Image (cartoon, one colour):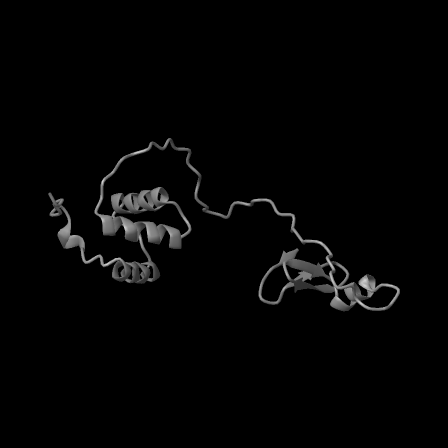
Length: 149
C-alpha cells in the first residue's frame, strides 16, 4: 500500500523501501541502488538519467457519506450584474479553481438551504479582492442598485 505523506515511504511485504523524488520522477527503492544500476562502464552517472514516472494504480473508492453526483442540464444565461461585483466573483472563482457558473451555483444552493456559502478563509480572500477591485457595496445595497443613465 502506497502512502504519499511527508515521509514519502511505500511498504512491501519484504522490507520498507523509500520513494525518492528526482525532478518530476519518483524512484522506489534506495537511491544508491538506482545509481549503481545507472552507472556505465566508466563508473559514473550519465548526465541525463530518467528512470520512469511512478503512477500508483488506484481506483475511486467512495468514502462513507460521500456526495452523489447529479446529472444536470445547464443553459446559457445573459445575467447583468454590477461590474466590480462580477470582477470579484471571477477572481474568487479563479482562486478556487472553478468556473464562475460553478461558484454561483454553489452560492445559490447554500443560500436556498439557509447556509453560509463561504469559510472564514474564503471570506478573508473576498475582503482582499473587494479592496483590489474597489467594491464598496455590501448586503445593505441589495435591491437598491440603479444603473447609470
